[in-house]
Image (tube, rainbow, N blue to C red; front, side, top):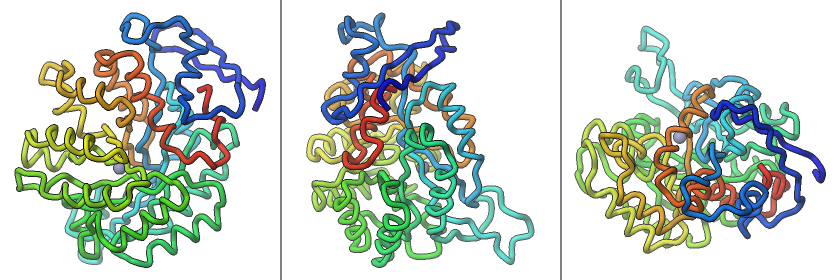
Length: 376
Ligand SMILES: [Zn+2]
């Protein structure tokens, strides 16, 4: 890859400014590739100076589904176009672990999982669909997409055999596990088996698999149920973190969901729970996608909330952004740019980490794309 150049068009500023990044080769990402690449752009920038931030931001998307709950999705080449337009250098990419049934008793084909009473079932082929689509991409695009395995039933102690099979069929492809759905209010209750939980024996096997290959796990585990105004399911997560200290867990939406918000409004126990969790476990990372920015990180006037700024400054490497799109890619750039106002209020160094670097640092070191993304 030496000598190859990448070009970004900074359309947001109205400037057609082409910035070239010369490739540095096999860089140690964990040593802080963001700082290395930032060095290309902002060698003389002092961190914390809002005026001199590396803007417009460049992002990594840590939570993206190429397929929806009917296992349908737009061509992945369209995702790459949106990523270029939106300055998204890299993205996690997964299928969807559940398939919604068009049940015999339902008169109309459902358009969303909650559209009727029919259940959903765990769908392993989602990983094959994703892998086959990725294989069609040119190498320069494929190495920016980091596929996670998700086609497993989290209550099945045999689920790990599917994961091992995928590693065998597509060697070098997989960079993580997830999004694994446990405690996802209606969605996991509508799954055709019993609702899964994070600290089950079946999930332990999946975490051991993740540990074996150094894969991060993106886990959806609502902090509570629709009615209980306390962190009812947090213990299941913290028990998991204790039992698998070597595995890196990305907690999807930091335990929130739109359904929880609908039923409970703003959960006042969320922030204290997150503070405690981050303090007690160094293997948990918080995905800020979907239902976290509002109403938690921004107040009613869209101003960044001080307590959230302080929390992220205290743990600057432990937060990632995500679009959480589901098979349609046109909102990826908008979803990530929504965070700009919040990022502006962080120190320059922290903003860069959250927007871009933290997700890259979670990816396994041993897989081929290491270094390939270093200069984006
Ligand atoms: Zn998701």
